[in-house]
Length: 66
Image (cartoon, rainbow, N blue to C red; front, top):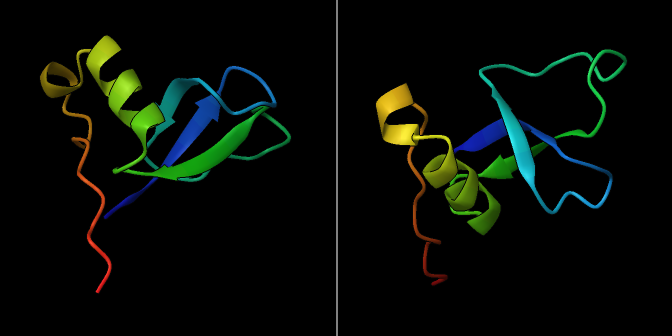
């Protein structure tokens, strides 16, 4: 599982609108946060953004707990 730096559409953090390769200055970007590659919000963003063609990190399935 990989942690990703993203920007959400608003403070509810329900929709990802941007991906960043590294952490960003929260004074410059509102609604900045992180998600893991197994987060359903990431899978939705990846599909809509043409993730495979853009070279974005692919979604993963949640790891089973032991």
